[in-house]
Amino acid sequence: MAEPLRVVVTGAAGQIAYSLLYMIAKGDVFGPDQPLILHLLDIPVMMGVLEGVVMELADCALPLLRDVIPTDDPVVAFTDVSSAFLVGAMPRKQGMERKDLLAANVKIFKVQGEALDKYAKKDVKVLVVGNPANTNALICSKYAPSIPKENFSAMTRLDQNRAQAQIAAKLNVPVGTVSNVIIWGNHSSTQYPDASHAVIDKNGNIEKAVDAIGNEQWLRETFLATVQKRGAAVIAARKMSSAMSAAKAASDHMRDWFLGTKSGKFVSMGVISAGAYGVPKDVIFSFPVIIENRKWKVVEGLPIDDFSRSMLDATGKELCEEREEALQIIQA
Ligand code: NAX
Image 1 (cartoon, protein in one colour):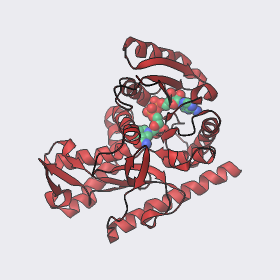
Image 2 (cartoon, helix red, strand yellow; image 1 turned 120 degrees about the vertical axis):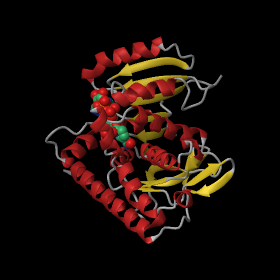
Image 3 (cartoon, protein in one colour; image 1 turned 60 degrees about the vertical axis):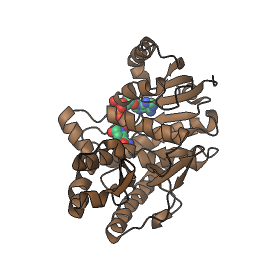
């Protein structure tokens, strides 16, 4: 059997981690033959809760899980890790301005970037889940200059999974038959869920989702708004934000990064932009990607119509504004 892989999860005492840790530890992400050592980071006040999570992991009796290291010290958390799920972040509290949220998180992701830079493996793959995920990932990368920029990503997979599920429900087909739905841009209300390249696999017959749906207005209005507002709808119903689905998405994202995407299928990931599709450079922008040998590549050459153009421009503009705000906070 392979040597154990060290994986860190931050925000380990929180609700997303509660589902995510089980998915990772039972082999959903790195495969059924990969032993794991889990590093669990949270803040000092949560150490008691974290102890309970550690007990539950032990009680799951998972054969792949070789060790669990709970800690409030970023040095311990990031030492020798090959994969990092950065879930922990400052949540938005009542009366908090967006700028205050960004300021609190810039600090957290600066510290974690520095710790990754010093202590993690140089080929570590970093997935930022904590919001604002795209800009947090950018800051984290900025403070980890010895790790390639390509190794930092932000999660838009939950939006992709939500979009895929909406299309499957509309067509009354199994969700696994729907692929190549794209989430472009920021994980925020300006994200652009785009079904124009999505396909349905009907027993080997590939049909374009737009043809199967036959209703462009539904795609541009109802579908778009439902995906963009799904997080708020879950909060309204559950009185808590998405957790199980967010954990599943994080696990899907990292699994595809480590094990690769299936032939002909692409997935959405927030990654450093080199300006593909005319979007701004040097922001973490969600693109359709394919992954091979643990390296992602943006799918290029997809036709972009006027509607898509305006959506890409709007989300790109927001990411530039967030980047400027974050840089101002750092320089202040
Ligand atoms: P919880 O509040 O349940 O858990 C967050 C945990 O992070 C807490 O235990 C907290 O103590 C810890 N934490 C705070 N600062 C930390 C630090 N500096 N180092 C380590 N741990 C720290 O939130 P949860 O529901 O788990 O959500 C976590 C984050 O995911 C939030 O920022 C949330 O906005 C974000 N989300 C992102 C999504 C995405 O698609 N990118 C979707 C789901 C989710 O809303």
